[in-house]
Image 1 (cartoon, one colour):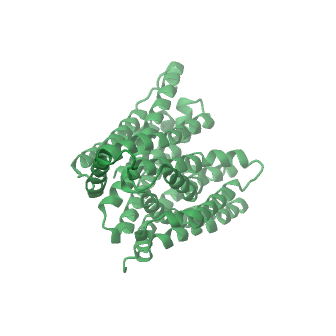
Image 2 (cartoon, rainbow, N blue to C red; image 1 turned 90 degrees about the vertical axis):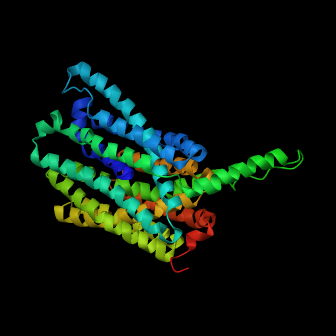
Image 3 (cartoon, rainbow, N blue to C red; image 1 turned 180 degrees about the vertical axis):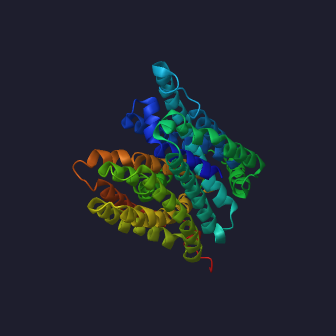
Length: 428
């Protein structure tokens, strides 16, 4: 539920760029997309800060701190003054406050993403951890589905003036209800056995070893990895997740804005309903990917998922470039991107957790995962916007390039970094 809430808000902001820009930036999409990107830039910082709390104090308190930050920042965005509700002064104040809330939200989401992945991998039986990650990916799909459904519904039942004046606030204000439920549920969960049995125990052993060791003898390495190894693992994670991050944002979300810019005759409500279909379709394929991960092992499932990204991104964009009819959009962004976006989420989450030992896991995942999401996901649309005047198919090339990098780094470095259990199947 916490993960669904996170992605609901992020997708809601993206789907409602038009009315948000009318309220805070006099219709400038550039300003609004910049503010959208600010949250991504803050995510790695939040991942490290809240991750350090998780490695030191436990996964549960880190999860709770991250979630309350996200809930408060989301709801308050719906109550801001704006040009439509406060005039010029209200618009200026609202824009500044929106920027502040996106910063705090980015910090919270950066910590919440790592918290949800790590909590589930550390509490799930290993032989079913793929399905557990599949359900986590389903929750992401539910967040995107909820956001696209609400945006499509608003565009279908309200006039454009009503949406710009007050309708855009509805998703943010209503977020208080699932937000309160999330915080209540998090208050009832227990600490993970991995943190209690391994991290705390190893910390006590290291402290004892340090006190008893002879001054001439080195103390054994903490966490099972040294600083250089830890850096290499974070760098590898950053590269290996690039394909998934790009596909989620440049493939599954940005594609609709790209199509509307090319063909203004396509109605916004039709595009949004295709987005609803895409997000619905992604969820069962997330579970199918989870089953495949348990059945064949992560070391086979991850490259399969990245190969799907590599083989579909550029062809779909090329097809849309030639003929962006609603039928083509249903097949390309709707069906193909829906299937692939569901598959990649399951495998990348487990990959991130498996790369690191428990004592350094939370902050390392928080940094590497969020840096990749920031650079290739949140900023992905900005990169292709800069390049599309020279390369009309820049989004497709970007998807192919990032997926290729993910596969190359995985086979060159990442596969050898994974523990033995990452290659195990359910039958082993």
